[in-house]
Image (cartoon, rainbow, N blue to C red; front, top):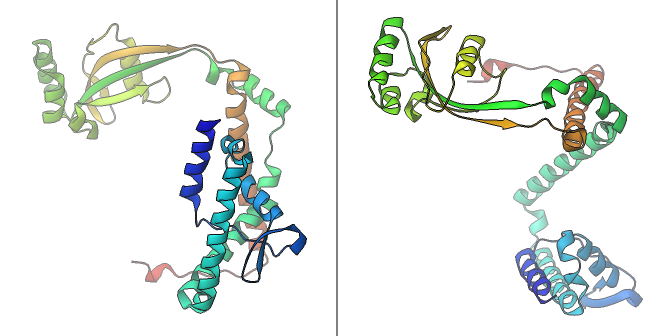
Length: 279
């Protein structure tokens, strides 16, 4: 409990002056006043609810509630000072308020028209899983490097040097025309379906750590591939991927609903644009 108290106290310090709005509650519920403004027990409890769940237990302690109340008093003091300074009348403040208003409007209409309609039912998630089982089966990841050059002759020459023990990374940095050359030709980890077919076939035909391919021709030029390591991912169960599928379906729905809604409201308003001034 002491640890939680320290965590809560630390969080209170970090969040002082991240304002919430104080109520003008009835005096009978008042636990503090700052000038004519009452801070009520309801205000304090509402503020506590804004903290992350892991701090809620600590914030049930009276000492931490009192610390939070003191911060709310400080906030109101600063708000009073801001009113006296007429900060709300400054053009910069009005601009920020208008920007905030627009953002709230955008967020709210997206919640009302889009987000509220993107839920994915369990049956829908299960159907997706059954129809796309190949995505969730066993996967073999491979980690490889390559050197890419323009001609077959150059590639054969480099392959000969590699077979004699010349450092792969150095040759990649010196000769490869692929952006990965500066990193020794490192392509990172990949799975089947992520690479162009000719390259993938060659990369997956390699056996054993540090094995080299022959010269592999693709639309980009001539490659020499070095296999670094492999690893397996076992097939994933429905329970393991259920929430990932749900999020993916929600994203798909959100994209479609957003497009459809924009098309609908475009019909009711004239839109013009002139891109000639864009440099």
